[in-house]
Image 1 (spheres, rainbow, N blue to C red):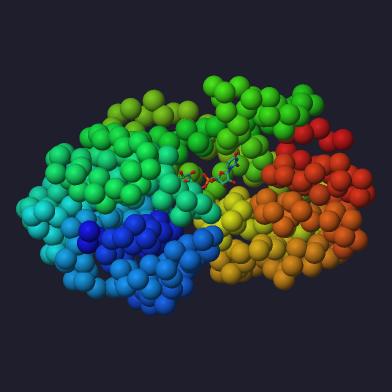
Image 2: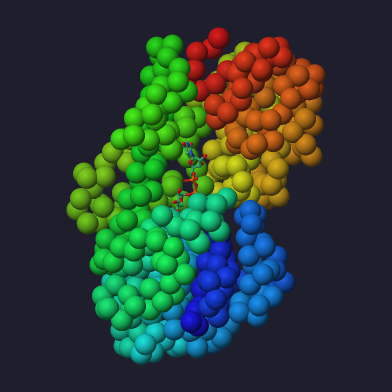
Length: 433
Ligand code: UDX
C-alpha cells in the first residue's frame, strides 16, 4: 500500500520505518527540513533502541522516503497522523496546533478513497471534528491509537498487544486490515469500534497506568509513616494475578511526554464534557506523583543536614526513564533543578540524555561519566534506573564521594551491597536502616 506518515517524532519515525518493514511504500512528512535530512540519511534525531536498524533497512529497500513537502504525499491511500499533542502553555488541556496544522497541510491532497488515520493522543471528539473538516474532499477519517512505549517502540509497533480501529465505514476497516495484515496474521487481536471509544482507549490506558504508579507511590508514603517496606509490599501485591506486577515500581514516579500531560488533558476534556467529577481522582494521581519529586528533594536536603548551599549533589540519570534520551517532564531533572535552586552544586550524568538535558537545564553541571559525577559529592541521587547505574560498583563510587550517602529514588540498587560498601542508603518508601 502507499502510506504517508505525518510527523516524525518517536511515534511517527517508528511507524514510518515499521510500515516500510511490513512491505508498504511509505513517505514520512515533517515540517522540519533538518529532521527530514537526518532521517533520509538513516540517522535518528533521538535515541530509540533498534530503530536505526529498521530505518536503515527500510531506506535501503527504496520503500521509505522523507519529505518536508505535503505535495509528496498526494499518492498515499492512508495518511497516518503522528504529530505531538503537548500540554498547552496556558492550561492543562492538550494543544492541538500540530494536529490542526497537519490536517490543513493534507487537505489539498485528500480525495475519495483516501483515509486520514489518527494515531496521536487527542481529546475525545477530535476525530469527529476532523472528519467534518475533511468531508468536503470526499476523504474519510479513522482513529487507530498507538500504545508504544519509548525504549520499546519497534517491538510495540510490530508486535502490539492489540490493534484498535475507530471507523465509520467498513471500507476503511478493510484498508486498515490490509495495512496491518502481517501483524494481524500473527494473531494480534483487532477491536473495531467508533471514534470516541478508540480515542478513549488510549487516554484511559494512560490514566490507568498513571493510577497504578501513583497507587503504589501513595502506599510508599504510608510505608514511610509506618516503617513498612514498599518493595516487599509491591512484590506481594504483584503476585495476585488480579493486580499483576507491572507498573507497581514505587519511586520517583512518572514523567515523560505522555502520562503527565495525558491525564491533565483528560481531566480538562472531562470538564468540557460536564463529567469532571468522574475524573476528579486523576487530580490526586497527579498530586501524589509530584509529591514524590518534592519528597526526594527533601530527602536530599536532609542528607545535607538541611543546608544544600555550597554542597555538591551527584545525580545519576536525566532521562524520564531508562533506554530513552527523552527529558520531557523528567522527574530526575525536576529534582536536580530544585536542588540547584536551593543553592547546591548539582552534577548530572546520563548515558543518553545529556545533550537534551543540557539544552533545557543549562545551569546544571554535566559529568562525562557516572563516577566523575560522584567526584567530591556530598550525596548521590539515583534518579533514572539505567542498567549502568544498577550494575555500578558501590565500592568504586564510594571512593569518589566526600560523604557516601545514596538516595535510591527508583528502588533499583542492591541495598545490601551498597550498605556493605560503606554507604548510608536511603530509598523512597523503605525504612532508613
Ligand atoms: C507511556 C505508555 O506506557 C504507552 O503505552 C503510551 O503509548 C505512551 O505513554 P512511555 O511514556 O514511553 O509510555 O513510558 P512508560 O514506560 O509508560 O513510563 C512512564 C513513566 O512511569 C516513566 O517515568 C517511568 O519511570 C515511570 N514508571 C513506570 C514508574 O515510576 N513505575 C513503574 O512501575 C512504571
